[in-house]
Image 1 (cartoon, rainbow, N blue to C red):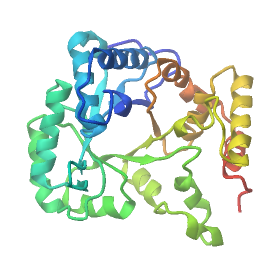
Image 2 (tube, helix red, strand yellow; image 1 turned 90 degrees about the vertical axis):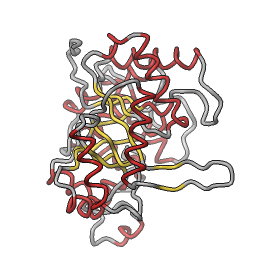
Image 3 (spheres, one colour; image 1 turned 120 degrees about the horizontal axis):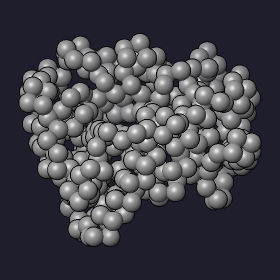
Amino acid sequence: MMTQPAHQTSRLLFGAMGLGGTWTDEPYGESDIDQAEAAITASVEAGITVFDHADIYRRGKSEAVFGEVLRRKPALMNGVTVQTKCGIVLPAGDRDGYYDLSAGSVVAALEGSLRRLQVDSVDVLLLHRPDPLLNPRTLKPAVHSLLQEGKIKALGVSNMSAAQMDYLQTELDIPIAVNQLEMSLSKRDWVESTVLVNHPTGAATDFPHGTIEWCRRNGTRLQAWGALAQGLYSQARETHTPADAHATDLVRQLAQERNTSAEAIVLAWLLKHPARIEAVIGSTNPERIRASSDAPRQAELMTTSEWYALWTAARGAPLP
């Protein structure tokens, strides 16, 4: 197992959605494998030990190029873990996309992921999106078989509310290990919902209140996708609103004062929350991956007033 750097980065994950070339059926090439190897190497060197996949990313090519890197350099992956998601069926031809969390679909999707990743098991299998036709009672034996066969070590979900997890948990006798949600300094509904209870503007917040609390109460790890806010506050790009510009200036000011990167400050804002959120880094740029590695240390250094200053700057209005 690799030696961790002085700044512990176990709360950071590499999100593999950007690997594998295009979102079309065009096959990946050697350059796509090289890109994946560079991103994976940068992640491992930065102390990132968890790699997040989904069977639909680049129509399966993200998992496939990851598997090719694994075949090229198996030692590169010593001490790291892999998770993947299933349940979304992409559009094809005249057919629209849909969700499918039936037992047979979940098992088949996992088998495909294992083949592409060139591994025997994944640490967590996440149900990617809520499926209104999901029957937890019929899914239960399939999940148990996958666990008994050692093909998965835990079950998680993505984009699910407290009510949906509670319903799923009534049938499953294993805990829901992970819930992956969009959370960032830009996508703030998850934290806005906690302070807008009994406030007129609360009706505009679409995040299901109580979801974060359910996860904390039940020991379900929270993972944030979109954690870097697509570079809104950390990259040299045009901002959309005065609030974006204000938050960007504050992020850069804090980064300069702390001799760190803007990426680390943006992620630190998430990581400071007591729910111990884990941030998924979706960039394939090795420089941005390395720039993110200081986030856990910056979360420890960030003061309460700085955390709230970033929040109010990004929301563009004082707290109620």
